[in-house]
Image (cartoon, rainbow, N blue to C red; front, side, top):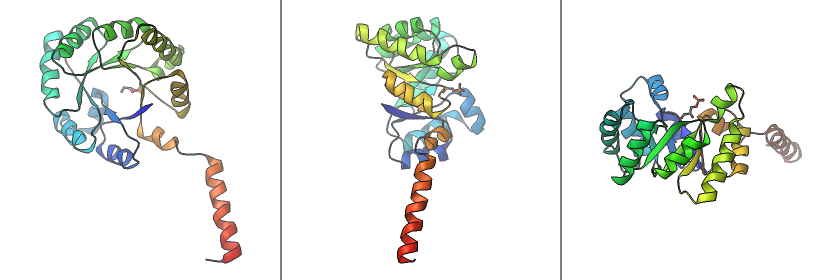
Length: 215
Ligand code: G3P
């Protein structure tokens, strides 16, 4: 399973990249707004750090606007993936970008039929949002399982990228369900290597050694 970081913060991206397990980056307009910096410049900076796919979302919601912005984003670097909303206009833009050889990530996916249609339109990635479904009393993971089954039934090559990850158990469940990619906030990436028994066990190993041999 590929691991992407879900942030536009350069310091977090560098730290995650230094861990040696980072496969890509996803950004969105809310994440870039937090950074208070120019989106194009920040995307270029991210692409200098990370070789894998970097999702760059369009702000426009109409077909022509998405095509214009998407083409501009795609020029920033070879590893840019144009992120489009899972709407009818986004679907049309997905098909058009795919025929131009530009990879797309169809975001804000909340039901399996959106995932089915974007796969037919040639999306490189689809982003179902687990946490936001959990927030409204639906089981986000069920969407991941249903999309996995549909894609496997028909051999669609679109990668299933689980987004809106809020805690480590989401990632465990995604790995068990066969998600191709998870995109994870930096704080949750750090939690992935944490266990209190690792910390207390390590503390005891070091203390026992020092007691016996000093130092
Ligand atoms: O990249 C989009 C997605 O991961 C957003 O997550 O926590 O704002 O629902 P969240």
